[in-house]
Length: 500
Ligand code: ADP
Image (tube, rainbow, N blue to C red; front, side):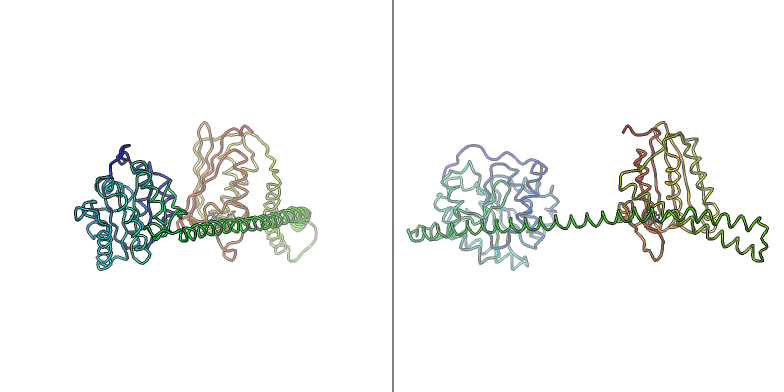
């Protein structure tokens, strides 16, 4: 057969150029295994790379011996591509798992191409591979060798046809690579008729044009051809039917998903409505209760009523007030959440000195910190004045500090305030239980907690509200943490309100 221009595929380029194609072909090639016989119809080196890299890598992973028959490219060029994709070419070569051979050593061993001899040689290679302990033999052959004087096109096709009988009962899988425009169309046509699987355009295709060997080997009769044609019709119809069924199943699945989504949304809406109603209802009796307790305390302290147990009653009232404050804080959180859900977080913008707010909150927590054996440390780098909402900033600091004390009891909590011309920064660092990496994102969500309710009380709302406030002020909040070593929360706030 004569070598027909155009020229050979361009010299190998880097692996990245084959890019996504490698991934897609690789995915499809995982379904290919021992006993399969494929051809690759290509024109560019990238198409060869996209098939050869995953083909060889999968073979090595599966413990098969990979034999690459070079002709168009050199062994070194192919090895370079494999090396670049992470294959340890030297080590695999040393243990005999990756072998490069020239076509002279394979197809033209006897000087002439004789299909039966080549088939016998393949059987021998398979036997040797299995004997050496490999699970099978994987061959990739550059077929450009056939562009020379030998073999006649007919011999080549006879060989491919014989292979079709050989593969299904073997522990061999092979890809024969054919350059589409360098081979005459008659050869490519017959190559398409002799390979059950075709890699073309970076896809592995079940080959509709594949014919049974009897048809190819000149034993064609009208009856055989009719049988083949009818079988193809049935096959196409069966594939179509499968696709339609798949489409219907997907449709049903989509409907089911939409229904579930609807149900879930409804459940969330009911929960949010309930939260809104419940938090308002809970809030209502708190204020009068607070006032009653205060006046009771005043009466006890200064009233004329003689009371034997005055001191004890005052202590009980104080403790009731503390419990009431906690209850009020929880209800406030719930109220905030329902406001946030409705998209209403009213802000009062004013000039605020960040250090002052932080100092005030820390002062409020001093007694509690001492009780919890948390030493509090504050470093403020100069005044940091910005336009913010004072009460909301107070809430941010309160949440971060109370968490640091709750999850870091018995350890110091260090707070730092700093700023520049653009922003103010607040850092709260504890040395407590820390947070596992998989929870770091989640803890800013509504009701999300990374601890068990049995060990630590809480609704899982503090960080959610904190992040919402910080974002409403145009800022951001980040956390760094390591389990057992503590957590650092860092809030950054622009000095001026965001444009919107
Ligand atoms: P709550 O503390 O009520 O559970 P938060 O929204 O304030 O709710 O925090 C959410 C979760 O994040 C907590 O349940 C806890 O698992 C984790 N977390 C927050 N702050 C800290 C911290 N300083 N150290 C360790 N874990 C923390």
